[in-house]
Image (cartoon, rainbow, N blue to C red; front, side, top):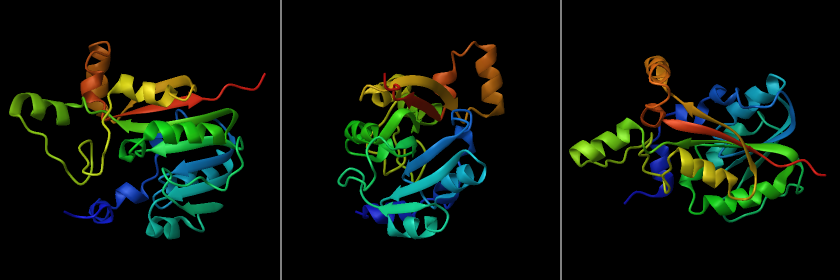
Length: 221
């Protein structure tokens, strides 16, 4: 059986190098301090800072290769397993936390979110992208062909430990007491978007490859 690191090494380069512009509709106009868990090569953080969405960026990843690639693009880096190690970051000091295609890889994502909640400043937000296991590419082969085949990336990524649909993704994000702000289907595609509109949203749960979920921490009274 291949090691966890070997399975991550089989993923396409875009998995680590892409800039997640799809989250921009959820990103606040400006957040002073931004932290990303599972940063890849740090390109999303660099894009946000270079385009004025934030002043300071911090990248966290499990693998040293990712951290070395991110170093120089961001203000601070930490190579840690977020499930085992706390970060040397002041509690209540982060304005936005990104967990993009991360939570489904964790043994206990709820516990991690509880910890990240403690890092958030009042009014801060967490934005996550979470794969949708109800997407037709996973659910139809299971229902009609009796197939459930893992791959190196995608919804049935062989490094996924958890699986979600819209409601369970939302419940996870709210589990530490944060407030739901917005949920968006992602990767519908042009035809899927048109079909979803024509059918008043009914096909969304089969067409959305991911859900983008934003939750916020209430402002202090």
